[in-house]
Image (cartoon, rainbow, N blue to C red):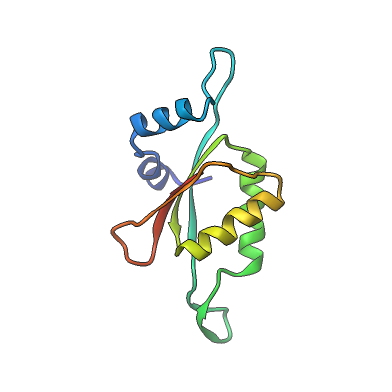
Length: 124
């Protein structure tokens, strides 16, 4: 789970925007629960990485980390997923493809340019 302070920071997404999105997607019904997850995908982007032995320039997120990330999201099985520290649109496409392969094929999504030039936000 996400530590308290970090989790609370991640959950500060505008509630009105999320409710509007959920309503527009037809997710909110009187008898149906909606599961929302906010998740820091921790640098899902190409960047210089150190694997403990060597430094790699512009390396993608390690495969083992991606598999663990997708597994956790699959277990949560959220109706709406907000992520931070997402890379460029190409990285987001890879992320969506992997989620779809795990059975989480989101039909509606948005990749948003954040203030950080490398790390962005996304909503699925």
